[in-house]
Length: 448
Ligand SMILES: C[S@@+](CC[C@H](N)C(=O)[O-])C[C@H]1O[C@@H](n2cnc3c(N)ncnc32)[C@H](O)[C@@H]1O
Image 1 (cartoon, rainbow, N blue to C red):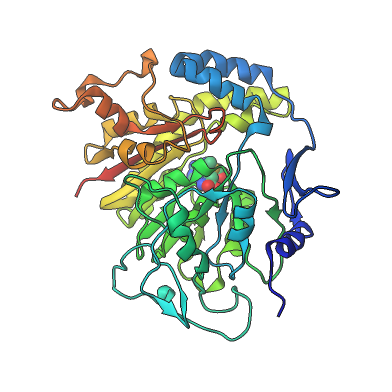
Image 2 (image 1 turned 180 degrees about the vertical axis):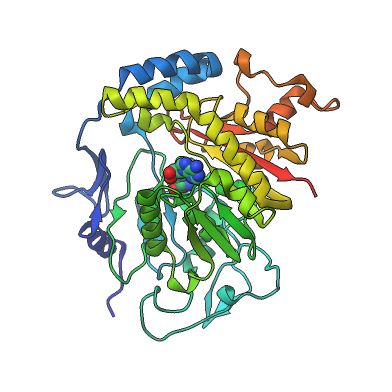
């Protein structure tokens, strides 16, 4: 059988890939071009929305000071935006790692050591100790033919894991994970994969900061997980790369977006996981009442202002609507967070995240909800995530905004105010060379 070399795979992909709206990676053709080299081409200009920019200038210069000046430069230059490539461990083995490395991509996260599970001489990965000590999905199943979707679960076979462990950068406190994301220091965009019936996609393109809320959840095999605001499903896919939950409930009330979510799940997960991954259609604000205390982990990746996309709003009507929504969103976000805190069991955790820089949708929402929930305790992500990953992301903690100074009654007597601020959440602010974000995340544990 012919070996799939990086060059050959690149050609196969190129004929099956479609690309995003702005930047296209293409193999360089012609004299002097090396195989698998890529370059950027400009496809279409997006038009910036001055009304949104002026709104951001006013709010964010007060909240972020100089950090806003450099974040603004990134927002205004979509060509500088970076994209991460999250690998799908359920896809059949490929030489994708080789291709990514030949393009200069490197692993973002410290990888799980190869586990004790061995199948026919190939190693598989497991993120954590299984609660029951054994798990169907982590046992080795074999079918002699068929695609990953119609075979039993095929764990990602990690010929690469053996080589990657030594290459990934050590992080101070971040646990090793089977979640794999490749990033490039330049704004190169790997082509996205078109749907191919009967084949799972090999990777998902995303803003690498989107993985941080999933890392903060610390998913373990056997967890019951709720993804309260799930479409289009990027974080649900990341959750399934991190471990093998007993249940992942992906909730999305919007029918069109739910459809999109279902397609994402079908494109990345084998059908053998169908009994563990369910889609639900509730208003997330009421979820906590219907399934109180049921989940170990809940992700609230809340509807938010989405700064990057709002800055490029398509018309003035849309802008007016969005600026109105911006005022209303914190109420919805707080209600979703309350609902999540009701849905999680005592001792379980909720991660609240958004992709806006706005303090009103971030720290202020967390602080408001904590006032109603004495049994909820915010956890410090500064050491675990911000310090560990500061090489790749620019983090900021509490802003200086006068309206957002913490309620003194919430400040623990013994700890410094800065520790309290870190516990409310951390914010990834896009910066030149580290263009990931915006992404806010906060982890709240429900006391036992
Ligand atoms: C930021 S997006 C989620 C992105 C998703 N977690 C991902 O990683 O692909 C927020 C989602 O919340 C949904 N949403 C809006 N209102 C909601 C509600 N009341 N309850 C639950 N979800 C809601 C939106 O339709 C949208 O799909």
